[in-house]
Length: 294
Ligand code: SF4
Ligand code: SF4
Image 1: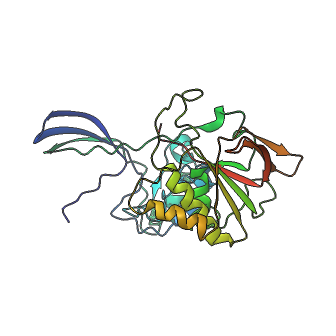
Image 2 (image 1 turned 90 degrees about the vertical axis):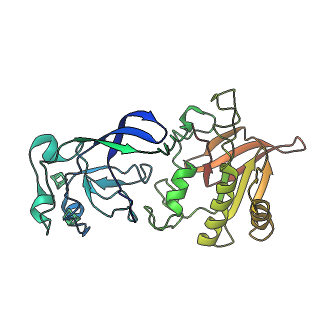
Image 3 (image 1 turned 180 degrees about the horizontal axis):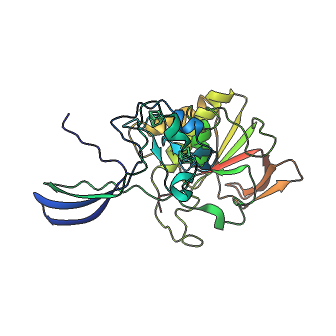
């Protein structure tokens, strides 16, 4: 295929011009020999060290010996040097002891190389907006107020609940009523300095509501609170109409005023004003929101 994947690599400098670039690459150690690893997972099973699983947005923990996610390419395990007991303290080594192919190699070090290439495609990704600053939504305090990325992982078959929608509060029960808030962290110069529309949140909120209903059944009440429904891609408007008419997702045009907990139930009371100016309160048992690229 003529494609070489250089994982755990960082760009140092790029010099040159179109057609002739020199790219300085720093490659971090995997501490596992890719050519020997058969992805059996024994190292992760035996590893005693648990750390926050960033891929699952902190909803669960992973081991220091790990693979980022089950569909990783190449499917090779890795040791997180920042948390590994052996690398940090010179003790443990369980992964090395149990690895059936002798792939664990604690002697690997950072390496540098220079690539000569004709062109460079930049795909930097993004940092999700942190909604903790919105105290009226209480994301930092209430376990059943979650971000849409957290909800994505809950919905995913490879996620911490294998796709089963459950609340993050201690009761871990299935929600019966979920609200989505749109434009949290976007189109807002008052609290977050992001005047732009992310251009993706409307559509993935609709998708999440439809998939949640597919997983939990039509009894699940899903309500999307929005400013404008921006369905600007091909057939996106039809997807929105289907969600509303076929799946019964409720769409409410309103910027929600506040979220407050209901006694010690971990339910959430939402206050909002309708299109015709009526002040309403409604109780939900889970709520997710969408945010833009920051
Ligand atoms: S135990 Fe060895 S072969 Fe198996 S996943 Fe870990 S490093 Fe790879
Ligand atoms: S040596 Fe590090 S990665 Fe290996 S089992 Fe121990 S803590 Fe886990």
